[in-house]
Amino acid sequence: MRFVLASQSPARLAVLRAAGIEPSVVVSGVDEDAVAAALTDPSREELVTALALAKAEAVLAEVTRTHADAVVVGCDSMLSFNGEMLGKPGDAETARKRWAQMAGGAGDLLTGHAVLLVEGGEKVRQAVGTQTTHVRFSAPSQAEIDAYVATGEPLRVAGAFTLDGLGGWFVEGVDGDPSSVIGISLPLTRRLLAEVGVSVTDLWSPTS
Image 1: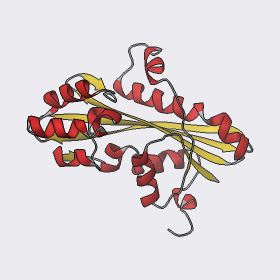
Image 2: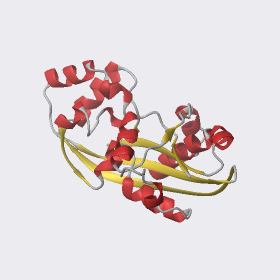
Image 3: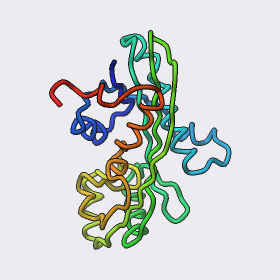
């Protein structure tokens, strides 16, 4: 059985590899804004879960063409800060403004997960869930914020920060699951796999 990650995130891939899984990567290309716009007043958990499920379902046809038996995992992360749900900033000005607000504060990083079970080339089961981790930010100087934004890293990640990259210098601490902040919660993924009848230990690569 193949483990398929419906994400181009190198951070999620690194987490899985470090935890003994060598996934196949199939990028979904989902229009996240369109998915979010189609939802009617979703809770923050419903929002990230809907996005994760959309990503997993978007790659299903491609996966079933090459793998009769697989688990497909989709993820989406957003930072809940001061009542707003923040995804990827996309540009330097937005990233700089977000860090000006976030500095010295705290927010909740939510990661939605969707696991689809494929047997005999057909989706037979699915499970979804959300992991929430509280993130406390330090107060970088303006020069540090400018230097961080100039690297381009915060433009491409939810909440304009990473825990496992350069952004880690500006995170004071996390209360909860660190792997979820990086992009894929190992505890939640294990539970969702179990819900569809798959043991994570059966997916470990032979060298683990």
